[in-house]
Each structure stands twice: as structure tokens, then as C-alpha cells.
Length: 464
Image (cartoon, rainbow, N blue to C red; front, side):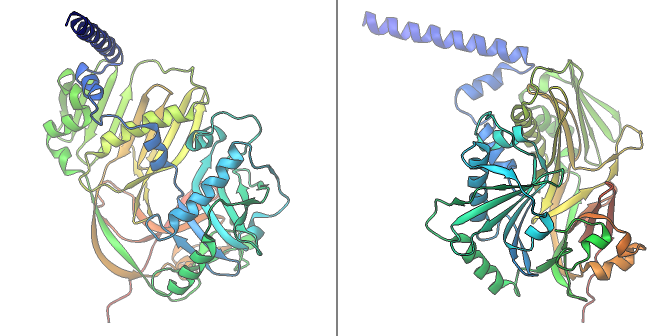
């Protein structure tokens, strides 16, 4: 009994020591002991870096190419999407870990996209450090380019043998050694059969600017997707996008934004449209139109140069907390990642509705006249979020109608000649150009090479 009692006392002392260290650590990081206790007893109060990787390391678009003029888009919920993405990730892992050789290719990207295979388009440039963090390869020696897109080309005789082509932000192409996949099934052939048979029902067929032989004359990217049927109408859904309803209740807003730290913050109403929460070096502001800002007034930690993963992980935990304001949130995808100076990183995120981009273009609240061009912008170091600015929305599905997204039909509406348009990217989506806009209708969003954005409303087919 004495030995058991000693054991119990020792365990109690160990637990008390851990608890005290945890409380001190959390207080130093401006938290509360409540958060530490919940974490200690297994409550899911934190997001692991594994979850961050799974949610953010996904393609913006996956494009199938028949090797002729037929191209199809697969969305994340479509059949076979995850199979193709898994094959691409395996190849990227082999390249990033040094298992698969990579060299500069003399092949032109515009010629490559006309070959049979599939393209992974990330929608932004992934730096080598971030890619290795996403894949979990650790820091490896050897050069690795930043990646905008990947073309995965199956061998014509054996489709289990894949070659990976990387398209970097400098427009340089890199090619891997051919590699045999580990699966027993030839996935790509199955996908092509499935999509081509179903294309008349649910998969819209696209041509590329290179396939239409207009990319060089326009000074446009060769892989811009273009619908050639004219006039042609395809089914799209309308959405409503309102400020979060939970933001209307100041107490509920404080609970969601601040959690267990709510009692430590001063809550003040700046005007009838703005609520501010502040404690120490932390200041949150929420506006009635869904605009949200956060600022950390302390000094940043500059020791984390190159630590993209740590900064992104802190950023996503912050976003996940904010997103709880929305009862019906959209998918949030990473659309930009840069180290703007030593140890300081800037990340941008945007909404996706059923796989379609939501373009945000509203004026910031600082009266600078500068536009917020992503749904959420965050600056962070490897330890914490330093600054956040974003537009929060609850999205609700509306009705479905048929809209025309043919570029040749819509080019006339821009007031510019097609040959004057140096297009970087073009896709259907939704556009928020004012915080007052609630009804979102399908829009053709055109990103130009000079960084400007052109939006063209897609005409709806009249009934009858």
C-alpha cells in the first residue's frame, strides 16, 4: 500500500508540474489555462499540420487532355479526381525527395498541353520549401523549381509509366525521368473513357488557345481554356452571399472570434457598423458588412526564414476559427504564398463554390483606395499571425439556369479586340465587386498578364 501511495503521489506531482508549465507557457503566449486543459484532456482544440496539408495542398483545377482538341475539367468531388491527384502527388514526392531525376526540358509548354495526359493547375506558384512541407519530405539538397502547373503524361505503350513536366513561374519547363506507378490499375485510361462517354451529360469540352491557334497572335498563355461551341448554353447555379448572421450578435461574435479568451478582451462599439476587440497587442475589428481585420502590434519573429510550413499552419488555424462565423461556408483554397521579407510570409485565400472561383474586388476599410483582391489576406511569421484582412460570407445555393461562357461570344462585350487581350487565365466563376452585392451570378473571369482582371457577365438563356 505504501508503494502504491508513493506511485500515486509521484504521478500527481508530475501532473501538477506539467500543468504549471503549460499554464505559464500559455500565459506567455496570451492564451488562457482553460485552452491548455482542454487540449490536455484530448479535446480537439487544435488543427494538426497533417490536417492543414490535406486541406490546402489540393489542385485548383485538374484538366484532362485527349491529345487532340478535347479537354475536360474535373472538380474535387468528381469520380477519379482523387485517383489522379494521388498519382501526381506520388510523382511530386519522388521528385522533391530526390528519388526521381529532374532536368530542364527544351519542350514548349504549349506543345506539351496538346499531348494526351492530365494537368494539375495549382493556381499559384508553390515555392520549393512549401512544396516539401506539403509532401513531408523534409529539407533535401538539390535544386527544385517553383511549380505553377504539372503535366502528367502516360507512356503511349504502357500507361502505368508516367513522365512529369513542371511549368515554373519563369515559364521554364522541367521534365522528370519516366516512372512506373505503384498501382495495379491503369487509372488514366479509365478516366478518359468515363469522361468522354459522359461528356455530353455533365462534362463540358474545352479547346485551348494553342489548339485554336490564337495564343501567339493574342500574346496569351497557350493553355487558356476556351469553349468553342457558339452559341452554347450550360447549366450553372446562382448563389447568395451575405455577411455571417452570427456576426449580428456581439456576444456570439465575441465567443467565436475570441473563444475562451473572451473575458480578457475589451469590447467596444466604434460606430453602429463596427465592433472592436482588443487586449494587449491584439486588435480585432468586425464590420457589419462582413469585413474583418486583425492586427498584432508586437514585434514579428524574423528567425523563421524559409519556414513556409510553420507560418501556413498558424495561418490556417486562425482561418478555421474565423470561418466558424459562417453557418454555410464555402471551400477556402490557398491562392498565393510568398515570403515577402526574411521570416515574414503573406498568404491569400479565396472561396470556391462547387469548384468555381469567387473573385473578390472590394475597397479596404483603411480609406487608402487600395482594393482587397482576395477573400482573405494574412501576414504571418513562423510563430503567429501578424495581420489579417478579409471579407466573410455565408453562401446559399439558389436556382440553376443556362449561361453562355463562349469566349468568342463574350469578347464582343468587353469593348476590346480579342487580339489585344494578353490573357493569363480565363474561367467561369462569381464576382464580388462590392460589399453590398448579395446575389452572385455566373461570370467569366479573365486574368490579364499585366495583373488586371476583366469580368464579363455570362448571358442567361431566356426561357422558352
